[in-house]
Length: 69
Image (tube, rainbow, N blue to C red; front, side, top):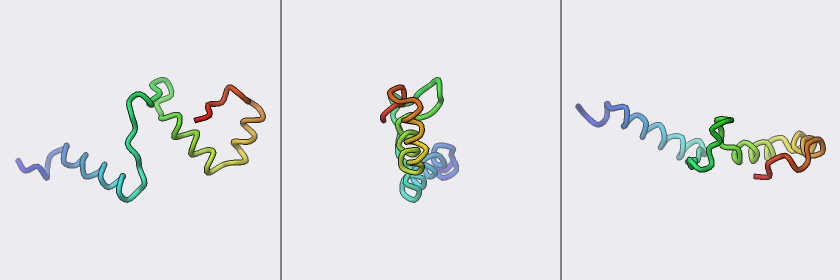
């Protein structure tokens, strides 16, 4: 069987495409929040960057219990 038709080859191609063309980044297992099923720091950074007014409102309401990363 050719390497081009394996699932591993497909996964590699997909990952390479996401990294090189979509700005996707590798995550680390230590940063993965299993309970929430997400990379918390990435979500917080995204909200801060794309929705600064919402983030300010959340900070005013929830203060120090919000994650800073």
